[in-house]
Amino acid sequence: MSLLKVTGLGKSFGGVKAVDGIDFELHAGELLALIGPNGAGKSTTFNMVNGQLQANSGSILLDGVELVGLQPREIWRLGVGRTFQIAETFASLTVVENVQMALLSADRKLFSFWRKAADYKRTQALDLLDKVGMAEQADRPCSVLAYGDVKRVELAIAMANAPKLLLMDEPTAGMAPKERNELMALTKKLVVERNMAVLFTEHSMDVVFAYADRMIVLARGRLIAQGRPEEIRAHPKVQEVYFGSGKTFEKERKQMESV
Ligand SMILES: Nc1ncnc2c1ncn2[C@@H]1O[C@H](COP(=O)(O)OP(=O)(O)OP(=O)(O)O)[C@@H](O)[C@H]1O
Image (cartoon, rainbow, N blue to C red):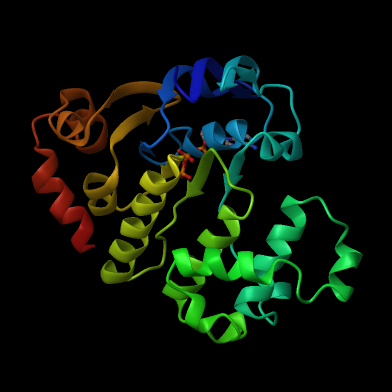
């Protein structure tokens, strides 16, 4: 059985069908990229899966449990995590304290408890940091970290709740190519090690084609293609929507990345 099964999912804003009855599935151990031109419905889809937006129609099953109608926190408790940017308020905390905070939250402890609990699950937090290659920087404040390292810590934070499905909205935005590749290689490693699934949106075609196991392509709210990267690259509809018919994906992709 697939981990996530989305059927007939739809959302309208006024007269605009932002997402128009899409179907897709996601399996444990798989990285699925959600791509499409601006306004295609990617964020809307994403936000329906995590419960920030309520669907108008359709179903989202996680391990057979219906997520439509649930609150974001309930969905999170069922095992749908997402990467958050480390909020400025937490930048003054050390790396390990940030992960400890996430563990507190995963264990549903009260925030006030934190003040008396500087040692709360420090070992477990260090284990998570070790998984993302950040154990050596555990006691540095997040505010002094390089951007790529902050992204690793954000990944460790998302892992604290041991998600079955992790949602990543443009994980590599603002990163240099080398950092992008390191972050995605790390994400892929975690997906395999933990038999977790990742659904991610991404504008960098390099990242998508290098790391996605499968891709789904939206255009104007409709799902126009899904498949493995090589199938998507050769898909006529995808080429047409992205670049106008008659042009090859490869050629245009190179032009797009050089901008
Ligand atoms: N809160 C909203 N109110 C009204 N219209 C919205 C709202 N959110 C999204 N839309 C519209 O729904 C459509 C899909 O938007 P969405 O943000 O999901 O696309 P996207 O693929 O994530 O785009 P981008 O790549 O530009 O972020 C667009 O036409 C957008 O203008």
